Image 1 (tube, helix red, strand yellow):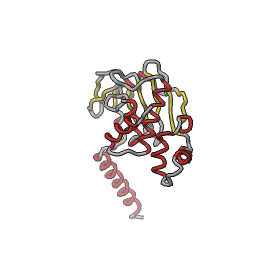
Image 2 (image 1 turned 60 degrees about the vertical axis):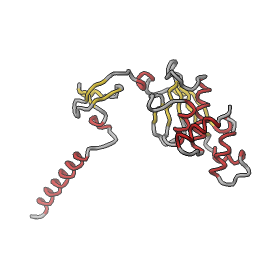
Image 3 (image 1 turned 45 degrees about the vertical axis):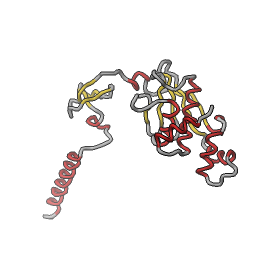
Image 4 (image 1 turned 180 degrees about the horizontal axis):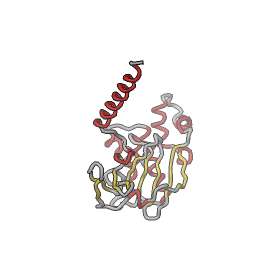
Length: 214
């Protein structure tokens, strides 16, 4: 298959072309081949879970037509160049990743290019799949139904009042909580941090009051 149109598509979206985008395209194509699926057009049968964001994810998206906006591309940021491809109709899942020594192998396919970046750019276009990729069947720890969730389901957090969609609420002691209020958030309110500082200062003052008279 001529991957040049897909590379051009990825390059347009990303503003340049790099080795990880090429890997994204190659891995995207291999994942679809393993599941015997084609790139999403009007359906959402193919779900892709990428293990990093950035250039690689753009290459995946170019090859598969899966996007975050369509909820067919999900990011589980492990900092790895790898992706799992899921047939949402059957639940079958295939994980594709580069072989661990792919950079070293690239030089054999670009012997006249001493610069490693450009050697990768050249080699990743032409290396056979079996020389550059590992493919394994996997089982998801979360069901496909839970990942996709039901549409038009909305609840409000009992603590902060904000709306929660896509069935991402957490039930704790009969209360409906968002992840942040349940203690699993990626941020902390600046007001909460100020309260913690004030509490810490108060504790230090109490300790000083005990220490100074002695």
